[in-house]
Image 1 (cartoon, rainbow, N blue to C red):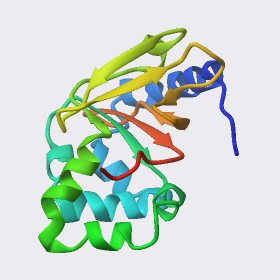
Image 2 (cartoon, helix red, strand yellow):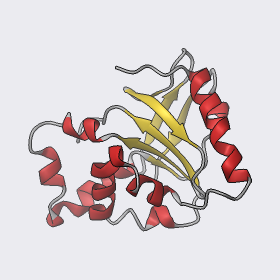
Image 3 (cartoon, rainbow, N blue to C red):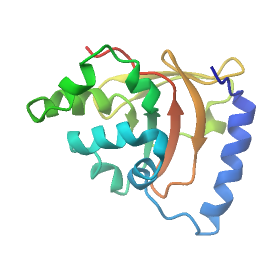
Image 4 (spheres, rainbow, N blue to C red):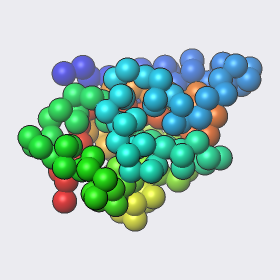
Length: 162
């Protein structure tokens, strides 16, 4: 598994801020997710849940985006069941656990444990007290601070479906 140190994550995020400051990056979080191959499952799920349009809004948002591999690790049949139209509300609730209605920068997390409320009504525990950033049990693999309406973190796993 690829381990990314918090210092490396913060440094990479700082490099991504330059294009935003120059006005070069105008894509919203939803556009970045939908144009990133490793988020294709997440993008499809956001659309099926009716959340993609919300992430096109003004925000700010911080999205902890699971990779395709994270979705593949769900128990067999879970994703297929959630993606059915009759389960749209359940899918939306599941995905909303990974969206925070504020912009959370890597630098603001350095050395801290922080609980953030999600748009789904729950909360996420972020732990940056070691050399890596964890979101619950998920490891943050990277961060993109360039979207116009928030920040996007790549995570390697999903919480179990309730």
